[in-house]
Amino acid sequence: MSGPALAIEGLHKSFGSTAVLRGIDLEVAEHEVVCLIGASGSGKSTLLRCVNLLEPIDSGRIVIEGDEITARGVDVDRIRRRIGIVFQAYNLFPHMSVLDNVTLAPRRVLRTPRAQAESEATVLLERFGLADRRHDFPDRLSGGQQQRVAIIRALAMQPDVLLLDEVTSALDPELVAEVLSAIRELAASGMTMLIATHEMGFARDLADRVCFLDAGVILESGPPAQLFEEPREARTRQFLQRIIDAKRL
Amino acid sequence: MTHAGRARGRGFDRRAVRSSVIALVSTVVVFGALIWIVTNAPGWPDVQASFLDPEVFADALPALIRAFAVNIQLFVTAEILVLIFGLLLAILRSLEGPVFFPLRVLATVYTDVFRALPGVLVIFVLGFGIPGLGLVDPTTSPVVFGVLGLTLIYSAYVSEVYRAGIESIHPSQDAAARSLGLSRWQSLRHVIIPQAVRRVVPPILNDFIGLQKDTVLVSFIGAVEIFRTAQIKQAASFNFTPYLAVGLVFIVVTIPLTRLTDWLIARDRRRAAAGGSR
Image (cartoon, rainbow over all chains, first blue to last red; front, side, top):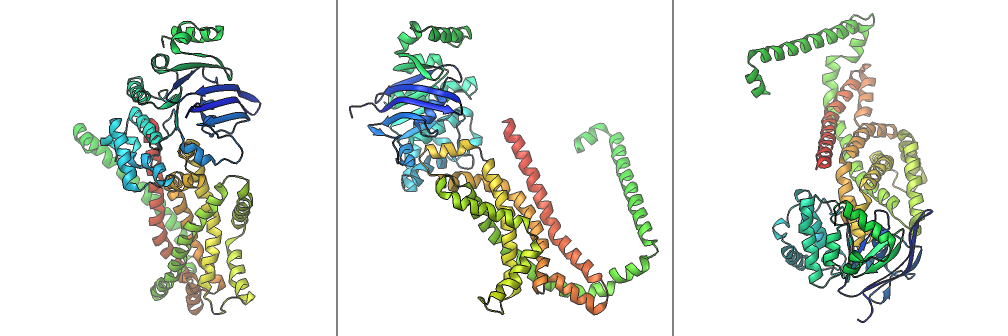
């Protein structure tokens, strides 16, 4: 596979008369980790939801591993299997055990036999230190544990690309580290990821590339060292200065 | 309570006894006054003779309880069918996309119409209309049409309860399911409906209390159930006491269900409160 894992071309998205995304062009190579930064309301979450086709787009193209997923007549359920997403609020299924949360999609969508799905899930849960919680229900877990289960649930579908939507924003500060280290582990294993985040330190450490979103466009992008140390755009400098003032960087 | 009582010593006990005594005295006074007013009304002896005749009561009760088996048959069968048909209607109304538009409209019209019609009318039309068509065996029991009528009416109510339950599940649950590649139907089946059903058990039981009482409407199309039996007994004895007995039977059967429903609602509220503070 020579092309990018994910390519977004000229993506526009409005809610009513409010233009949220105003022409996004972005490519993510295989095994690349791209972080989206920007103020609240800059369109980061909307962009991720569009890539997953959870939001219909107004115009533009999204291509995964060479297949245009925004083409007319594609089977969106089939597309979504290839793109995992983890939400800010975990969105675990509260009526199911951890194991059932993780195995639901493999069993129902991929038709994996239960025994096989559960043994694969257990391997993933062990990898992220949650095997002993596999029979617990989500409300028995801490926020950090719930978010790690949500990551595992997405990984169980073996997606080509993983989208992370501010996955630490709803967590108590002392629980952020365990989720970030899970994501680091994923990056080290070569998972292609597009990550919307407020954790600038994390973005600087982990990202191969950082994109600064402002008012629905990618204003500036580059390697973290360049973007954080020598931002070209005034708006980027302003944003980073505010973060520094808030002692978040 | 007992610890606090012991800690505060005899003073607390005395206060507790005192408030119990006050409650008892005020209850006796209020009900005593009511009973005195009713039993001293000018028409009381006549009313007592025609509504509260112990002999007629004792004579009618066994037959009424036997006839109540028909009511039980009516509401148990109808309730099972309502649970299924009501859910089906709710699912039809929850399907997305233009393809399902006709089904959505049909389900909406259905729930509107059957909630608007008086129950006795539906049962009348079915009980006398369907046999009139000549399509079914003319000896078909009115109980069959009664079950059909009650099912049609209460499915409309229960489907609305189910639908409210489905809509009360946060859209992020559907988003999570769909993002994993589940279809809308799979998301409903495995994620949304299981959570919704748990929430709607108390309000559905509430509708079932209404359904159980409405089984007497089936007497109008000739089913010899408890109310019809009471009419027969009343006609034979020129005494209204059998109706009182019918009321008693319904109270005995329905109040436990009412209590259970209230208890379930209170439990859900406590759970929601506990969940919210987490």
